[in-house]
Amino acid sequence: MTDIIASPSVRALAREKGIDLEELARDLQRKNIVRDDLENGTPAATRSPAGDTSYWQVDHARYGQVTEQPTSRFAQVTAANLAAAQAHIPAVTHHDRADINAIEDWRQQLKPEAKARGVKLTALAFHVVALARCLEEFPRFNASLSEDGKTLFLKEYVHIGIAVDTPHGLMVPVIRDAHLKGLWQIAEEIADLAARAQDRKISGEEMGGASMTITNLGGIGGVGFTPIVNPPEVAILGLTPPETVPVWDGETFQPVPRVPLDLSYDHRVINGADAARFSARYCALLADPRRLVI
Picture (cartoon, rainbow, N blue to C red):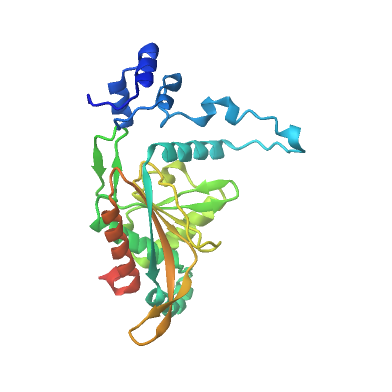
């Protein structure tokens, strides 16, 4: 890479620090180099804010009463992973809404069977089935990018991560081979994994290797958000509570329940058109549940 874009002052500083601009540009995967990229010899895109103590080393007690609360090791690891993901992944979020009228009708019809089976059939189970189908049909979403960005690993398995809010932090247990499992088995696994996550009985092996993660705020609130991609995955699907919206049927407006979808993806692997097609297919599967079982 010879066409580096850098001001004379930046080039002079690079010579002073002994930094090879071409090598730095390759590491950053961009041609434009600015002064911040040279600070402390560490690229700005990868440097932690903790490197500059002026951001963090503040005597908060000077301004009023405070209480110190140490963060758990689990929370520290999670925070580090999220910060790294936010710093390294050029993420974009695609927003959509899916008609869930047919899903809710079907779920109501299945309530007696669910009771007989002793299974709580939530809408999340349908989302897992739909996502598993989409990951089979859109292999770039079921992939991981190597650290150097030179190799894309396309997975032949479909494992779905389920983000669970617990008192001790966010946990993401994984449903293995979701594309090979039926609705009832997935519903049972969701309930089991969520319950054990609350009790901190999920092993490390049960939280690794997901193809993609679903983070569901449906039971809490909101109208949309921007979920952070969970590396080494390249996409994540966020759900918020369903809303009833007026939809024109050709003659009049009809109330239709729709669930907001927030699909964040790594733009190095997935383009906007890919995300739009993925989302459209996902919405089509939810709108006609028969597609989920055919």
